[in-house]
Length: 201
Length: 201
Image (tube, rainbow over all chains, first blue to last red; front, top):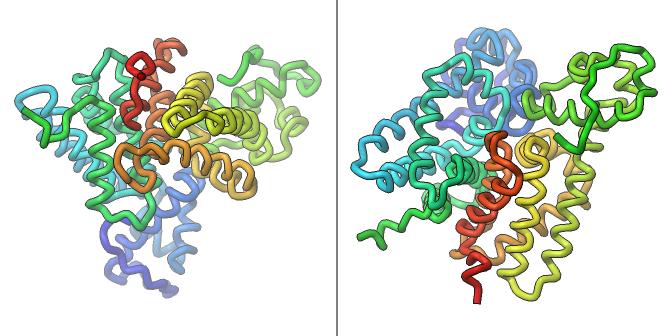
């Protein structure tokens, strides 16, 4: 799901030493979080899915929250990067468009993780303990709410963000990344009343 | 959240006999499911929140799944009703518009339950064991996918459905139902390329 993980099952107690185990634990966690929610996934389930012992998981992550944090950190860093670039655009429409296209790109590449990040209530408690990340979400919302086609208290911006994340996470696996990204951007631009670049003056 | 529940806390073992207890258990479950996800909410947490014994909860629901079913049944019945009416409209645009407006109405009245229904992975397992409900979801999707402004394999329809549900569930409590519903419908129509009724020929 996130990056390219080796998915061969292993059942040795020394699995903590096998290169790539941490990545495989993270990939499997994303997949199980998406299927059973964060609260519905135990470290034991992740170990079982990978054919590893629970000790091998503990070697990398002491708790499920630590694992969730390790998954959230790169995606919030990516979103923060898009927010920073978008905020430097010269006008409100360009800022919103940069935010939308950057976000569509992120959720397309991380289809399942994007759903967990956007919709799983367990992520909210992580956000509460990481004010720098909730600050990023607020700036992301503000960039889109700034150009709402009619005043709507952020409802339109929220429809755009949750719709783009939801559209990515429910998309058929037959749809390749480039096509999905383009479709999400087109839908997002219509929500926000942003013109297609080709029709810009 | 759903209907009008009496929210007075009670700590008697005879709470099962107090009228309205079943409704209060359901209302509290929706609120906790929204805050902690279905898998992250135990019957004990619901009992604690209401100041009831676990026996009082058991009197109404033997398992969390039974409780989830009791919550899902009315909302899927409402969606099925909207789907049936929408399917009788004379053309594709009217069918999609009836589906969109009916759905926006449902998620506005059930803001938290709509988020649980749309985004909580635990609901998917309920759907699997209730093929009549997954059939309703498929018909709901088909009604919207039918008028996608450009072919997108259902991505646009999915952005509309998840965006409208997401927009409702994240909306500020300051926004009244009528305003929220109108804003969700306006955003949904833009996603789907549906004209505002006033601009219809």
